[in-house]
Amino acid sequence: MTWEQIWLLVWWLGMFLFGTMAFEEAISFLVTKNLKNLLRTATKNLISSISTGFFATSILQSSAVVSLIAVSFVGAGIIWLENAIGIILGTNIGAPLMDIVLGNLGLKFSLSSIALPMIGIAGFAFLIFSRYGKIKNISRAFVWLGLIFLGLWFMKDSMMVLSASVDFGQYVSLSSIAYFGIGFLVTVLMQSSSATTILVLTAASSGIVDYRMGIPLIMGAFLGTTLTVVLWSLGPNVLKKQVAFSHVFFNLFSVVLWLLFLPWIVVLLDNVFADVVFGLSMFAIWFKIIWVLLMAPFVWYFTRFLQRLFPDKETLLWLSLEQVDPAVPEAAIIAIKKDTVKLLKKTFVYVLHIWSVDEKILLKSHLDVDGILAHQKAVDEAILEQEYLTIKMIEASLVSFASHTKRHTTKSSDIDTIDELYSAISLAVATAKYMKDIVHNIRFLEETPSPWLYKQYELFRSMVVRLYKIISEVIDEKTTDEVLPKMLEVVADIKLADKVFLENLSKEMGKEKMKKFNISDILHINRYVYLSSLSLVDAIKQMFMKSTEKKVFDQLQ
Image (tube, rainbow, N blue to C red; front, side):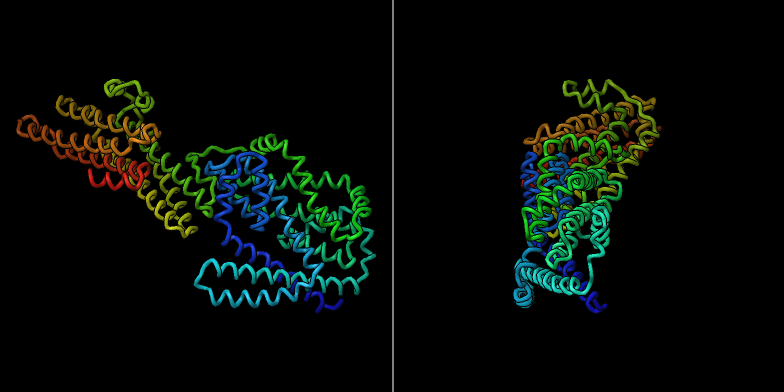
């Protein structure tokens, strides 16, 4: 075999690989949205999860994309990890299925006469209908499919030349483990078990590979493809590791099992299937199906094993977005919403601590405002500083993640939702910032010997407790149908408290004793309490009101 023939084989293999990757991308544009909806809704139990993983991977032709979506949905709390692992089991059946179908089509039929017209017609359609997104993507998919067919056909021709010019008898004596290692190494180098499987089938059609060589080569390819998934899981995301190693252990255990029975499998296939290509194809499919059937009853235990092997490590922030990929906007937006509510709760606690209120006491619904105020909770300044730092860190994480998510979506509804969440995040932090700026003024009021000033402190504290008691019910969604009237009531209360304060201050300013105190300080406190309270109300509006309610609220307040 000449160097020219070797380079031609490499050329057609490269064409096949490129066509495969491009075809996956084109199909993703067409069906990913529907597949996401399928993964979200059709995973109620293990059987439906496995079936969903199988169909999604068969259509999308990318187990990696399906795995990414599954991981993001788990991180957002849309599906359970156990169901995600069921999806992964399904991908292990769906992934080789289309490889086998394409491989057999390419080897049994003359696809070159189909491939060239397909590329030509689809190419013209791509250019002519480039303004129409769906037609453009369909045309693109057919161009790449034609390239796959063309690569398969010429790979077959190159293999036939290779088999005629090279004596492969000298390699027959290699052990099954050696062939397994070759299959593993080739897959790692090409980053594609599909290409390795197609190469094995092509070599089998040319008489180069028999059952004793082909079966371990295919098993090596199945295990080799897990390295790509392991590389994908690198980083702090624990869910990615759990899902990635479900791939690894699934393939590792199945390979070990099948290698133990390899001699009997070779004999069985040799007696049942005279056509080596068809026999290897049946093995590749049933290799996965049988192992999925064996594994299915133990998925719960397998999930617990992965969770113990890669336990969740609690962090300072402990955010949902840490377990979600922004490339899946549906899951990312849910994670941002959850973490924005967490930010609101952190702000909630921080403000109450500034006013020496025990949030646990406040959350006891049977206590009235006076009962809550009777419990003083002294909070150290260092703790307050750490709480504010945590609020700022959550803000930074949310803004950065939301920005990445926004770049991964073109849906106007998603963009509008992210913008509303940006606003809620900013308002929540503003709520904390206003209070942070008057901490020392509040401490002065708390310790003042002046009865009038201390009374103002108690009035501020009472107003804050009333506000936060109502808002705690909204945040915990205990009054979902009453958010609008509740918030209108809160705003009225805030404005009334501001009016009463200014009236009281005006009365006292004429008295001689008021000259001993810095009136600007008390005005400063009132203004910042007012702004902080309204910022919190606006954050609640963004998070918990419907669009129609927001319009009514803006008109009435």
